[in-house]
Image (cartoon, rainbow, N blue to C red):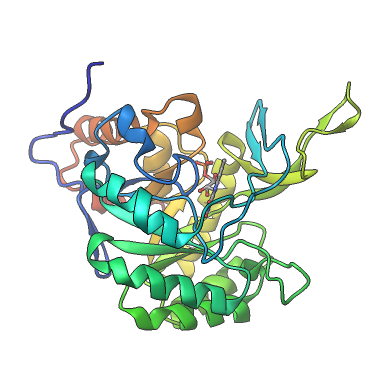
Length: 315
Ligand SMILES: Cc1cc2nc3c(=O)[nH]c(=O)nc-3n(C[C@H](O)[C@H](O)[C@H](O)COP(=O)(O)O)c2cc1C
């Protein structure tokens, strides 16, 4: 297979600084959409990406939800994978070495069912802090101590999690839900309690019905909507949070399938972007997005990509 060895645009600065985290370029994978480790390395050189964000891992293993877990839609995709995985210790032993061998810059996504689960996961992850750029803290998961409501719906719970993971000397971004009734307030609680930045957004609660089978398409009945339909929702989340927090580091995610989607997300205020569902249709989507961003800068005569961050706010 002919592989892309290098993404190079002479004189163009694609780099991105988010607090302590430096990225050579702003294109990342989205958690859970490219396996647990180096799976995408079969398709392109993953060391060329700004970073690879892993599937969320917890201190425990989980079998995930009943099948079917994926339902393609004309406007994107539904999934109810349910954070299936073998846990963080297994990830450190098997997936982390594979990512390192592939030369990837790594952001490890963690999750939990209680605040203590998050703190313990970050403590374990911190034993590998020299091997990772940062952690992504996925609070868009059910809080078993609060009737299964997502942590990400609550400013106080999100703030508590940020406070509980901040003392392990690992920079972290908090990943929020587009379904929070006051997203800006939740984001504020994350930033006030030590988050390096925000990841906006996770999937939107949704469902689909198979009208011939007369039942929900997903085994878990409902799941999360991702892909094209989520793009305008993610854009607004990024725009609203950029407006409220002009200096925050923000990673935009939702329905990015092409360079122009990524550019729109950056103009709305994202410093970096993640590519998720598009990878299911084309495993090279993240590297293609990077190449297309470079092409756009070339066409528009831009020297420094970060100059476009938040330009949608200018008159
Ligand atoms: C199959 C699948 C699995 C996912 N797993 C995770 C996960 O483990 N952790 C997480 O934070 N987000 C997870 N997500 C959400 C994505 O990271 C992303 O936020 C969402 O899909 C929106 O981006 P997209 O439209 O580019 O896919 C998953 C999404 C899909 C489609």
